[in-house]
Amino acid sequence: MQTILGAGGDIGKFLATALRVYTDQVRLVGRNPRKVNEEDELLAGDLLDAGFVSQAVKGSEVAYLTVGLPYKASVWEQQWPRIMENVIAACLQHHCKLVFFDNVYAYAKTAIPFMDEASRIDPPSRKGRVRAQLLQKLAAAAETRGLQYLIARSADFYGPGARNGILNLLVLNNFKKRRSANWQTDAHKIHSLTYTPDAAKATALLGNTETAYGQIWHLPTSEERLTGQQLIELAAQEMQVKPRYFILSPLLLAIGGLFSGTIRELREMQYQNNQEYYFDSSKFIKTFGIQPTAYREGIRQTISSDAGFTQ
Image (cartoon, rainbow, N blue to C red):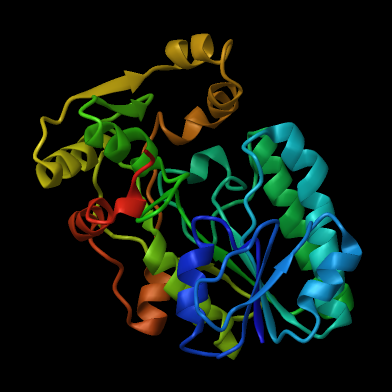
C-alpha cells in the first residue's frame, strides 16, 4: 500500500496514476478524495486530526505528503506544523517511509537565481519560514527517531489541470478567454517552471527507490532558460493569439492587496520574480537518466487538455 496525503491537489491525480507502476494498492486521502484509478482506496478526513492521520498511514509502505493549504501565511503558520507533526508520528508508528513534496520557499533570497539541492535555507518570507520549520522537524525526526524520508522539491509549476499553476493562472487561462496574459513584477527575468506530470512521475520513482531516501531531490525541470516574456510568447504561438501581456508591478500588487487577500499574500514573494529564478534538477536527470519535458511540449499538452483551464 502507498498513500497520498492530500490527494486532491494539482500533483495528486498524476501521482496516483504514476504509483500504479509500483503498486496495485493506492490510498487517496483528503477532505473529499476521488478515485483516479478504479482500484483506489478512498479515505476522507482532516490531516489536522492525529488519530485520522494514523489511520490513513496504517498499512502503508510509503506515504506522500502533497497537501496544499490555502495561500495565507497565518493559515500555514497555524496548520502546517500540526500536519507535519501528525504525519511524522504516524509514519514512525507504522514504520512507513515519508516523501515530502516541497517548494522553494525556504531558500535564501540570494539562492533564487540558481537553486540546487545545496542552496542555503534562509527564507525571507513568513511562508518560507514555515517551510523551513517543516524541514527542521523532518531532520530532527530522522536524527533522533529514525524517520526515513526524502524531499521531492518542485519549482513553480504548470500543467494539465494545475489550478494553482503560475503559467495556467496568469497566461493560459487568460489567453483562452482572449484576454491579455499577466506576469508578476518583471517578464524579462528567467523563470523555471516544473511540469506537473514530470513532477508526479519523478516523485513516484523517488518514493520507490531505496537509495533516494535521506536526500533532497529537485524534480525534473526543463533546463531551458526562458524569461517570462518568452514563456508568454511560446504559449501565444501554440494558442494562435497575440502575445499581449500586462505586468503586475509591485505598486499594482500593493493596491490590489487592499481588496484581495490572495494578491496581498503574493507581495512578500516578489523577490522570486524581480530576479532570475533558475531551478537546477541535474542531480535527478543524471541519476535516473530521465529528461524533463521541454516547455513548448508541456505548454502544448496543457492547452490540449480541457482540464488545463479554469472556466
